[in-house]
Image (cartoon, rainbow over the protein chains, first blue to last red):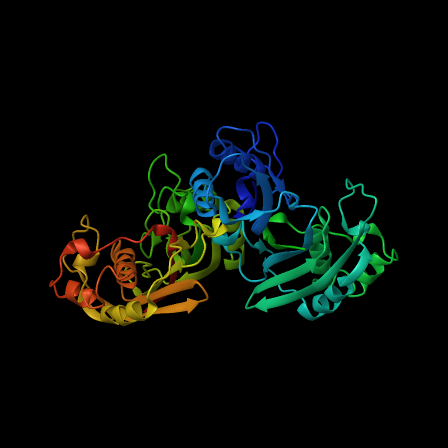
Length: 244
Length: 244
């Protein structure tokens, strides 16, 4: 039987998302718990995608196959009892045997949390402590240029080699709650560092170091790559993954 | 010159507040930083009071004397550059030489954060993960009984031996933001475990394990001590200390 789980994690104390020998990773911890549940059988998980080291998730997803028979409620409980306290399974559902957690993704939503106010030690690993004012009007104008179908190659990590860098962003906006800024992006897919690079560049615009039109110029290859800045990982959350 | 600092900390990774040989404590870290600033002179700090192990602060205060001459801005910067990233000095001000950060406290405000929704791994050390519904109406009725001048001996730790257990609570209420509950208490002083014991007992009332009238009965010594429960430390914040 194939299962899809929705889960959250605190990325702070993981070496990264993907399983690596000898390292504490999100995937590694999940597969270790599933090994115990699935009658000591090596059980691979297939996630909607990786997140960078230090990045969090509120609604990451993954599928896997189990040989044993178990109710969804018991599966959730068994996973949560075996997993460390920085990973939490929110839901487990049954899916068809041809379902794939990565290839069938429709949309993903990422949020980036930034504190413009006084440094807050309690939030230092969960909200980016920028601790200075930003021009929200300029950033809100600039973020709109990211909406639509574009070649986002300039916004991804240089390590990324793909046939196609075209992605569609359906929604991109900035919400302000007192001193907290929440950047939200919904799209059909995001490449490595893409969200952090979009946010980092927006921060430079908000700071007045770059003009509002820079995002549009970067997308049109009319501005140099050195205008791209990578925002710190701790403010980023994979909020939601939706399927076709 | 005597200085008063206002500071915040994440209590998660400290052995406690008060200096103890060989242990990582908030007071110990502050005195270590002040030793460097004050020309390698042992510099004692006097806090508004201790907080329990695992409890956080957004507005703790302490005073100390320095032999050197330093501007307030430089003192704040020097402290923040020398302190670990889980303590942060918000403000430094000059005070009279007879000022005392503990004896001259007028009011203290504590807040307790509780999540009734799904377990959130990112917040596990900063918001109590209760993860079940509570009857807010019953708790909001019960919390009002704490307002006023009462003998709070029954709500303190049994280790506490004092001449006087009478304290005044000016404000006590519960705010609900989605699944988050924020218990707020303002009073002229709180004893060891008092806030956590008040919150713990309120939670039992919200859960339906105790009647709404239990708080009043406990204060009047008409209910047994076994009705007192201690809420976990990670939800508690010393929010503010005000002076006469």
